[in-house]
Length: 462
Image (cartoon, rainbow, N blue to C red; front, side):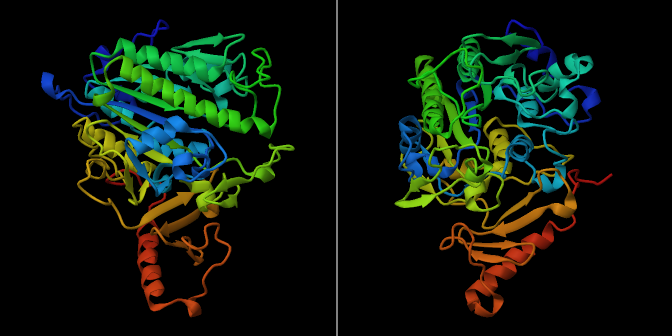
């Protein structure tokens, strides 16, 4: 990987590094008038559905996200994992965490990502923002070069990241330390999210004449809650030293601004009608009992009721997230769908758009959303399954299966989530209606299907 921002993609198109032990999709060159779409996948960090106006949020300003939803498609039932690393592993590999999640901060090196597959199909690929997918030894100086090469191993030609190698808990906002294509850079007086988005814009400019994949797992609006360049008391030299929950609203507004900057740049390049923008978030909003809000009010008005964030919880407050798709001329404007979707659906969706075959040596749990995006189908599943444990401990894991309305945990707790959003009143079996009993039986069948799937991600288990 070179440090000047240019890639080695031409040397890698024929296949992935043999040592990775992964399957490589065949190269398919599209005809000149059938160029596959560009893909811009944005995932903000710790931002629940209640923070976006298009989803009924009343306390934050999100005009650009609202515009993307109004001119594209809003998924009302999009689900992430309860915290960041599990979501990152799932979105990149297309698998349920029950199969391939090891522990916090780790993406196993034997996994294939959507970037691996699209790069082999001729896409230019780039990741900017927050990485957090190495192992606890990432701060070991003797391993620095090895860790610098990890984004390339997972399919990214270029990167501009925080928390890849030597940054650890170094500043991410004011005067950040960023890692750009194998080099550490301390940018005094700059703002980390600005560095990432400007790199992203430059990447799109340089690759405007070929299909590209831009993956942007945002740094914002994760704690520490600090001023942004649009805050009245912004201090470019603060080094993340000022922390107060009152700045969370400013950070949400800056997420919205960045999304707008990317969309506007695509317009300037004349690429909007051949670019799919997907926006989502990695989990719900930071919980107030984590003590990071100080004197700020952590309750949010959502659809005329007060809610609080549930990051780390399996309730909708922790797992239900915004999911917006925008592609002018392809996705019908103003579409709203109740399709049950989760992060495993991203990889097969991108592969279908890029005319790339799914890997044949591993199980992909997701379903392509292309029929929904094109208005040809209402759903890709009627039951959604989730497995979660932050540290990867099978004995401590939580699991549920759910429909739009009902949810069953593996401990037998059954909820009418549509009428009990934060799961305060489980329904006893003796009080269930005949229809509820039938739904519970169906959900139990899904739980049973995944009962022996821990660690099984290959088609043929070794």
